[in-house]
Image (cartoon, rainbow, N blue to C red; front, side, top):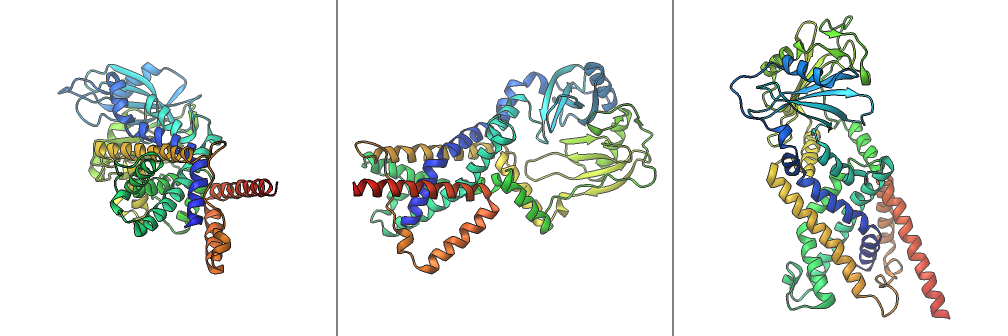
Length: 443
């Protein structure tokens, strides 16, 4: 109990700011799709039309709009009446996973927008800005260490807090005060009541966000990827390799940006029709021409809501023959769980309901951090800052308990390197505080 309290205290105080920023930015990201639809309604929505231009005609319109210096990289046909088609281009100066998208009205052919889009989600500038704030504070790769600290320690702080809650529940005379705050309490007890009550309601969600957030991290994320590879849990993808000379007569052989070839617009309608007959049966799809000579076209479902639709098919542009296909139903179980975990974390699995749940969860986690600091401030002495829970837990623990904690700490430190490093930092701070307190006592 004292050891858990000390861990919960130090981690909450020192890592709290990172968790708070991650919670606030994550809450914003949860509602970003609604913000996006409102801000960019002119580019995303058009009057429904009974007639529709072919993809080739829409692509030619987009190519005329964008001019030279860009290479056609993908097309996302309008998923439903009243929506626009996205014609995406690779261009020098764009960041990783970014494309320049021309939004075309599939009925009239009017160009409705010209924006940078990001990733599989097709995020527009506002959502991309929020996403990068949540991911790395707009500091690039070094900033990703902040989100890894937040994701890693969120789970540990939540687990330690949950264990403390269970201990207090067993000992408490009024157990309901640990499930909902007692309105009669004042001061520190009132803050603690809210902290404990909110904490138990957000515990499972916090652990889930921690576990899924780690998969995107820099250091621990690489360990997760290695583990998935070792256990054959990777997400399968369609093979685009072609046998023979691999030349695609439908592709022009002009210069290509970002390692892709310039594709004939007329091929898009054909490969989409073949994919729809094969296994692509949703409106949200992306068509990608060969990334290099000797590779196949890919048509992939990009729907992230439930039921999950991420089937894809690879098509030989020379013969219009399907060379490979991947169905979500055939994914390994762990790959399915990983897909669902990511989509739940991003708020796309169950649409608005998922987004509202994430927003409430983010608000709860942020409130937990603020309440934790308020409790810390309330318990401060007349001068200086509040002291952590008393030491002595390690000395009082049995040898097998100390050994178990040490083994767990080493394993966690190896898998979550930033946790190991910051844990050493906590111990250093604790040691310094102990030395200062001892010196004051002697004086």
